[in-house]
Amino acid sequence: MRILLLTHSFNSLAQRLFVTLGAQGHELSVEFDINDAVTTQAVELWQPDLIIAPFLKRAIPEALWRDHTCLIVHPGIPGDRGPSSLDWAILDNEREWGVTVLQAEAEMDAGPIWASELFAMRDAAKSSLYRNEMTDAAVKAVLLAVERFEGGNFAPCRLDHPDPSVRGRERPSVRHTNRTIDWARDNTRTVLRKIHSADGMPGVKTQLFGRSVHLHDAHPANALSGAPGTVLARSGPAIAIATSDSAVWIGHLRNRAAEHSFKLPATRVLADEAAALPETPVDSNHGYREIRYEESGRVGFLHFAFHNGAMGTEQCERLLAAYRHALKQDTRVLVLTGGPDFWSNGMNLNLIEAADSAADDSWRNINAIDDLAEAILRTESHLTIAALQGNSGAGGVFLARACDRVWMRDGVMLNPHYKDMGNLYGSEFWTYSLTRYAGAENATRITQARLPMGAREALELGLADEYFTGPRDSFLDDIAARAKGLAASRDLDALFAAKAERRNADEATKPLAQYREEELERMRLNFYGFDPSYHIARYNFVAKVPKSRTPVTIARHRDTRARNHWRNAS
Image 1 (cartoon, one colour):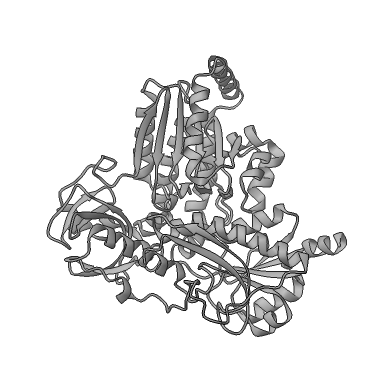
Image 2 (cartoon, rainbow, N blue to C red):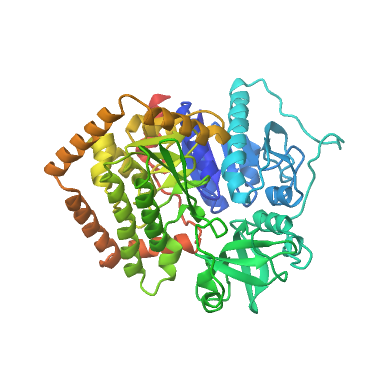
């Protein structure tokens, strides 16, 4: 079928549906829901058999849902209505929640139901639940709804009458008062639940040192305690605030009254106050732990869970130090696991935007990532494996490809391109590693298409070497078992010899230093040249400026060649 994805933005769920439905043979096009006229024009150009709305912030125009079947992906169980569904589920401590695919009608979230899927809730932030369990459930529900629509014989059901077995109900938007923290009474679990419910946006508003700030990125700090509401310590980018029974680490804050009103590390927003706090070493057992190393037999595991996958200069330097420490251990295989939500998304654009010189900070950041990538590429003592349990984008994808093996969880999304960030050229030795593993033709396709891809396509194109289809929770266990088998293999010495031979041959043909110099010369122009595209795109990204149009790479209805291809194929 020809399907139009109508969405507020091309978020993780929209990307996953774009890739999954496309793999099933459907012809997909995307339109950002900017206004009624643009949406109507998209429908007229694409003439879709079906419209699917994975992420909207306003109602679909009546003229469209009356003439076309429009399926809304609602992040709630059947009967649930309202814009804050997942927020309420977290606040209410639901142990199970769901996704409902329903047909658009005049009343919001009240149309007939085409499919629904339940999922177990974790004690996790809203964005993490959305990106993982909810997205997995949404894909299953949408695929079932599409199958039913194609079949032509399914009659969607209504929930017109109260049903005591249905827990879903209409709920208003969550307000600030619904998640206000009472520091004197709320224990750590309650504080975490309130902040988790507002993760991403808008955060939880509170007062710290006489300033009104929004809290983000919360984790338990059980080793600390003090007068409730008191800021106790700092650790890396985070500050610790005492609760009624222990404390929480707050990694990021947002101060709307500050010059930089977007999300930044807590110790950056409260720099003067934080400097006077006692320090708990970052990455220590009791600190704000972004990097963690462990071993099992002859396999080392390097975990790094940076907020939103963004890696600033200092984080890259700490990760490089941890990587070098891991290489000194008595192991043969080193697995780089990233974090549960992201492996890496490359440079930290928020920190760059807040810097005195964005160009200088960009330059320091890309060189720090390159130092890490080069250390991985030059590793002789270990076989290195990038284990992608979470999504990855831009430089993070090519940092992973610097490893000897890239193993992915099925369901992980990659965005292996830089161009949407102001035609950024990119580094991380992608001109070397991508051509080596993917070949010149695929390298061009990957970097020029500017499209998301899933694990299967990444394997076909050489961005990945293997993907795992088991449950999300078993991925790291599966990786560990496979890595241990590799470390115990009789062929390991031969693999090391082949690795060394290939690296020496490649170095003789063209040194890594030359690849780096050539890439950074192009990056220097992005940062310091006359074209301000990168700086404009970065500002728009950090400030969350709404898109004024949909990129033609995904808005295929605005590409004459794509429309003609579909008509000819039909």
